[in-house]
Length: 251
Length: 192
Image (cartoon, rainbow over all chains, first blue to last red; front, side):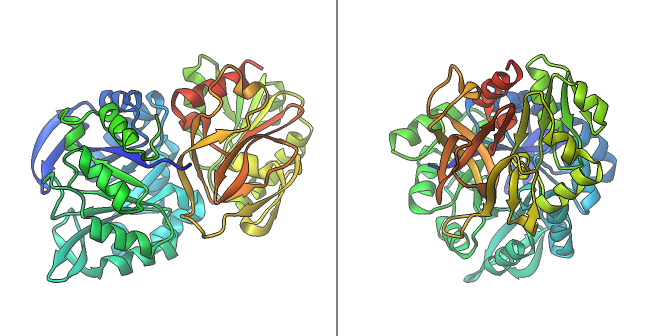
């Protein structure tokens, strides 16, 4: 049986791991290569690295980091942040990233999705969507959550699938870093509207939140950062708890 | 020396890293002499079947692979290219395994992505290991079960998770990305 995936996310700034609350107020949380190795040993199913500075000057630092991670860990990992073109994606993949994740660039230039898919295949491409509720509607935000694109989340999710995305990473910004639980309603709605795997992100604060995610929705994976980095939940403890609750989890 | 065939098919660095972590020397190459002189040969690959097959033909590696005598391992797209044909891009394959590669129906999410359980394990790749290990898959196309199947997996339907014919081995999953279990499987190939 296909297992539900637990994915720690490491936000990278100048080669270090950071994680903020509601995207501001960043704290330093450690060396990404060491953390990646520890998570892999602990049973993380995949890893995601997001370069949150993503400036052109920092590109070479990120590429170096990606090759170091690829040398040391033996589980799949995704790299995101500042990828705008097929060439950006190619450089990361050729240095050992299994997947790349695009957000703002896919919104301003959707054809980049198809470009990457044609060369590296849909499985190498994750589209990250930052969602925020305004009134009764969920909208897609870009530029680190600062700009409302006016796109509706479900419609954009369907479009990226059509263009060639292999997976969607959906973050509900209202809950990101709050530890109040995943937004199950939006996740299930988006999950039902596409036929590619969906990774849930934003709001994980305890074991119960992951159990709710995997029992009340059919999403494929749950992603979290701060609860893992600061040792509030260890991955082995989380996995044991989910297995005890009869969920399909890799031991 | 372990030759890893470089035919411009995605992330092949991972395969090389995984083999080197096990203490073997690797060379990423498309040079025929280098491939023929290697102890073992690996055909990795993520990407699209018809363009990958075109590259193999362009570098004249198709005939070489069909006649190779060393232990040979195809991974993921590598496995699919070793079959007769693939529905992806309607391409012919190398024809080592007389079976077809088809697209998963949309009954579940496609690609089949993540950790899934192997069953019905046979042969040396799975020596000294748990009989139902979880390994990492990411693919939208699959090889049907056949007489070559040495491991099965269930997703939408049972399919070939690994295949063997003589010196030719292939895995649909990624041993290089499957943690310590994947490392064991890769090691079993490297010590054949």
